[in-house]
Length: 583
Ligand code: ADP
Ligand code: MG
Ligand code: ZN
Image (tube, rainbow, N blue to C red; front, side, top):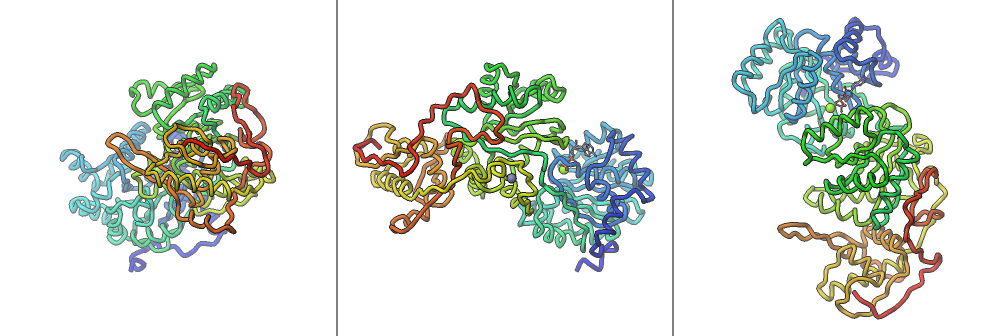
């Protein structure tokens, strides 16, 4: 077992002892502070950074769980600079290494990397440096493959260890060790060798996404015994979360966004996230037509243009960037006041991350997502190849469709945390409108939709979600004349019902592939037979007052440009028309 190897086994620490590590009463503190300012040009530590550094400098093994962008890397970079010898950093991706090396070199911290594409000559220099008492490198980045496959590297590390030059081991993205994590890398499994061979060297594991069971697994795999675990809360208390219903008329949502930017966010920085490169161009030009200076940003743009847009935005010459998620890596603008999603994200985790680029300075900022029916299926075709992509997307849809639970609490479960309503403090639209919803019986609607799909199946027809809504509403192309029940619901209501049936398992999605595209169809779900039972009931919750046009979350702004052509069905029992109609 690993415990006998670890000279730094940390007994569980009590609160008081833990608080000591937030303090400045350590021999290395002056050095940390000096390099924080003079080398890294930062004014102060962020929450948990000093504690993490003090613990690691005290030779404790440590797992640090912190949201992306909070500054985990500094927790080993700064100790590396203040320690004798060098710090070994394990990173899963060469691109992450390159970014860090570039950054370190820009602040004159000597860092090098070793990976599969390193030249012989470069490797030689690095290997020699590992055992050089002058420690020419403070940080040495390697891929886990290198550790697993290079005996030369291991023998050099052993020499360095014996000469007390290996001061610390940092395992970045430590959740990659665990098969239960979402990003398992087989070579991470072999990293236990480090702690077994170098028991006196403190190990620091860093991640943004590990649950406690994943961490337990990592502990075993890395052969660390009882590491101290520091977990930053993922709750961004200064962010206001809101969902708005997106009309199938695309222009209405763009007008809505324009009027928000023009009023609530006047002269403030923000990002509008869109689904595709085409959307980035389109939405940016539509916003420009409405006198908003918005620049598009996406992956296929010329690199020069990309950095120009980034630069203009970072320096406040342009306030709004309309971007695909390619805009995000390396964005560290503190005063982003709004992140608007013109299209839903592919998962709640992604949404948390993308929207989390707002309000890094701790001041209030808004995260608004526009939720449109047809977007569900656009995103769906994008994630169809991913293992649990569909499931994750439906969770995102559930987040959007939800009208009665705190948006934060829906996010928190994804981070193994509990944020109660107090943790929200009315900083989401559902908490602000907590009484504003009613339950609606949709059993009859469900039966109609199911009948429609059965009818389609009997005619060997596949219905796309849009065709399904059209047919149910009595529109769509004339192919077969049949007796079906059309609905008196408005389009948005009809869409909401279908989404609800999808979420509850009465409907399900079905794909088919052509060489050029993926088609998406609606099918009967596992629960649909229940509807044959006359006593079976299906219900859905919906906003009571704002109806289904636009839910103005914070009640501050109403779209002025966007006149909605939403015709509302009469409240109360649904009036059904039975008519000879088209499928
Ligand atoms: P993570 O690994 O947690 O995702 P990084 O280590 O990449 O985050 O850091 C994200 C950004 O935060 C970097 O640009 C870094 O310079 C910045 N940062 C880190 N610590 C501080 C600090 N104490 N004050 C200001 N900025 C910081
Ligand atoms: Mg990181
Ligand atoms: Zn809330």
